[in-house]
Amino acid sequence: MRCPYCHNSDIVFAKEGNIDKDELFKFLKSRKGRLEAVVLSGGECTLYRDLPQLAKEIKELGYKIKIDTNGTNPKMLKQMLKDNLLDFISLDYKAPSYKYQEITKHKNFALFEESLIHFIENRANFEVRTTVHIDLLDENDINHIIKDLHDKGYKNSYYIQNYMHQEKILGTLKEQDKKLDTSKIITDLIDVKFRNF
Image (cartoon, rainbow, N blue to C red; front, side):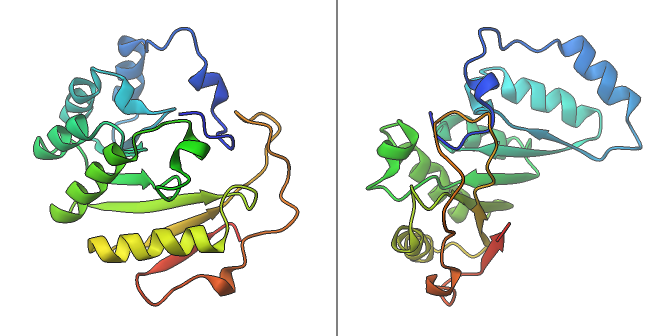
C-alpha cells in the first residue's frame, strides 16, 4: 500500500527487509520477565512469508503477540489464528470501499473484507481502527465505515485516530486545517472511540 499519511516510509521503500533473527531472539531472551508481548507491525508484516514461523518461535519464549495489519493477506491471518499465534489484532480499515484504492493505491478491498469478516465470525480478539486526515476522509466516509461494521456484526470498539503530522511521511499531506467533526459521527450503532482528538 501507499497510504499518504504513513509514517513508515523508510520501511515501505527499504531495499532489504531481512531481520537478523539471532539478534532478535537474543534481545527477546534478555527481556523475559520484563516484557510480556511483541508487536508485529510494518509496513505490512504479513508480506513476510515466514511470519507464522517467527510468531511460533516468539510464542515458544512465552510472549504474547499483537499484530498490526491492513488485512490484505487473509490466508496467512486465518492460519495464524487457527494455530493460536495471535493474541490480539489491530485491523486497519483504511477507507470505505469506494475510496479504498484512491487512498491505499491497493485495488483489492475484498481481501481486507475477507479478513474482517473472518475475525468477526470467529470472535477474534481484535480492534478495528481508521486513521483520519480530513483531506482524505470526511464524516460521511467514517459513518459509512461504521454502518458497514455494524451490518457485518462487529461488536468490539472502533477507533477513529486523528492524523498526527510528521515531516517524514509517505505522501505529501500537510498539517490539517481542520479536524473531523466528531459531533457528526454516528455513535449509537457500535462502540466508537476517538484517539488524538
